[in-house]
Image 1 (cartoon, rainbow, N blue to C red):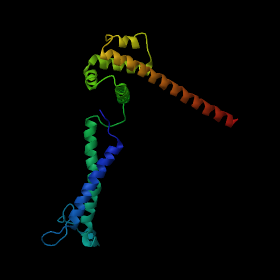
Image 2 (tube, rainbow, N blue to C red):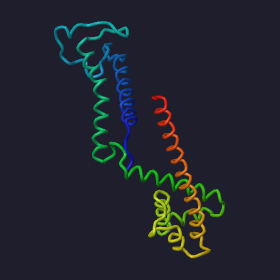
Image 3 (cartoon, rainbow, N blue to C red):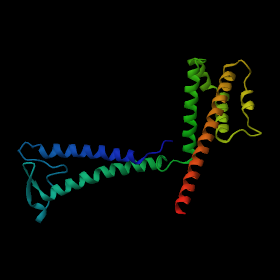
Image 4 (tube, rainbow, N blue to C red):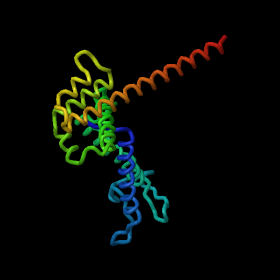
Length: 214
């Protein structure tokens, strides 16, 4: 389940603010049948004392108390809308930081996406083949195992050969898996190489810092 980000709620706030401001502008510049200007909430709210005083803005008289009420609505209403969305998302578990499960799923989906693009570039498989691969639970399970080896390497229980032999030689599934095993192993070794290079760079930086201190 996709998590909501801060930008999502900021967008909701911005849209809500734009809507309430549009209504406020319409209300403030619209005259009724008697030729009187209106307010966002109501011009019939009783106000007294200093709040009953008038001032001129936008070329029209404005009651101070009614203006404050409208201003409060403009500020608070978008916040209430965001709060409602937030509570709804909390109920559906769409808020908060990404869990390890979310990160693993996104990583797997990215891996599968790269697999699909790589298979497509071979021009060995057609649209019908890809549809069959997606609907074949056994093939999809093999993809998960290839991804597991990509993350952790082969083990005694899980090897590339044990995955490939689940399909007979000459089948589309077998041909695809043989190709993907090569692809997956190449990516795994490339990831290891990049990780080792980063490690060496960090060690070199730490070593330079130590020398500078001396």
